[in-house]
Image 1 (cartoon, rainbow, N blue to C red):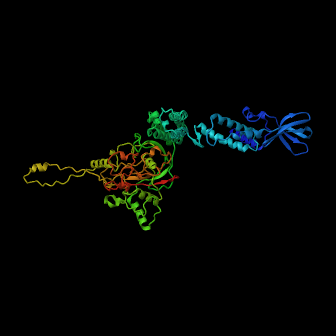
Image 2 (image 1 turned 90 degrees about the vertical axis):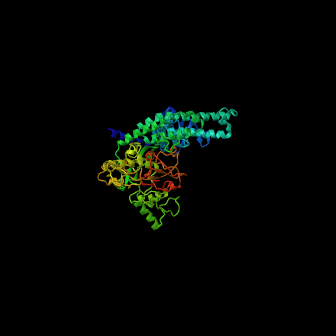
Image 3 (image 1 turned 45 degrees about the vertical axis):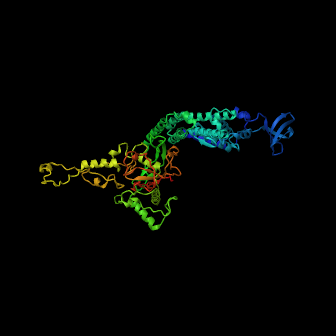
Length: 617
């Protein structure tokens, strides 16, 4: 039945378009359409013996003659015509007049219309499309009709067109706010005393200034209500991208124009609960994670055995309880496209091949444009025997070294957002392995090594040392006391050095058959040592305030950064828990750290690579 109905509709449409319609009379149109066409008696006259017709307004007639008003371009004139030369006179087709009257019903290039204007325009254009199917202007009218329908759909979603660009509801209100800011600044330039609310020296400027002041305040106050109404609706529709964009716009507006502002508007709305924004983000992410759990995501084929597939998606980036002075502020929703990530940190043996290649060929095609000329890529880790093992991570490299190796390997450095997603996932874990404290995990940091050593000692204690009876018979102490003395029992310890990139423990306990504990500590997607072992360079420049202006989709960090690039993941020299957390971010505090070393010259920064899947930097 549905098939027949659809076929019938298609035939009807084709018939309407192909078959010329009969002359359209004004009386056949709706009242709104008739209002567009003058209430005149228009006729089409055909003359005898001539293949000629005349369209004109009939002003009067008698049995013998008619009088018509003829309009040609800018000239109007009357003409009397004898009926003896008229073969026929019919009411004129008013469809052309209708089409001409509709020429103004097209999308405004700069601003959106009102709901009533959209509805009326669509109604009239639809009427023409229905009643004037064979008219030569049909295609133009249909184009305008479709354009208006597209705009009206955006309008119904709450979007608004401002200065020719469509904005989501929150972005539209923020645009209004910023426009008021600009206007207030312009007025203040004319008279600086306007910023003093008590100034009344120029009534006209005072009125204009106060008007935009109130409009700005109203825009700021409308935002929470818009968010409260829209977020549940976007979640219901599973429009997570729009929800993330709107929430981030709201968040960044609040931070940059309230939290970080000393203007009066900050005082007006600074009492708003900031946790409200975080709770909105939590609602979005909870619904997103639930929806994603229903999907089956297959990794691409032929992935390098030393890489893992990160499916991408939305996640919360940053520290939940961070404040405006923290570089992890604010926690915000980010989307990252699917990509590949190295399972392991780059080891010395792979990096050595790169250095040998550069020395042998002199090739510099992989160098960053800002890298020093004739860059020497040897790492600091090779100066230390206990850090130079083939499978240990290369450390003591600067960002340009890491960039060049990644490009030479036909890969790239991961962005900071990619790195955090790979370590954290959408479930928002505190550490790459979950939320359990580092003092109970197999990680290469101070607490982790102590924990492993204690477990190793309990499973495979060291034998007591052989006692040397140096005091026996000397008369200093009794033979009995010597015999009863118990020597100090040695304890197992693990040195502060890097581990093999593909091993979750150092070689000694790992190869001890008596050591039964085999806990592994990968990230959610299978990357090893994203906390401890080597800290890691990422692509982004560091900026302490970048999170407050970050893009929602695939952020790449600021364009420049005076403090260098971001370092992620802590290292084997890390002592506290904070640096091991998935949101922790660092930057080079001095030249030594820019070279991947601490102030004492001990190397600790390495890197791992990523590879794009349809997204490139």
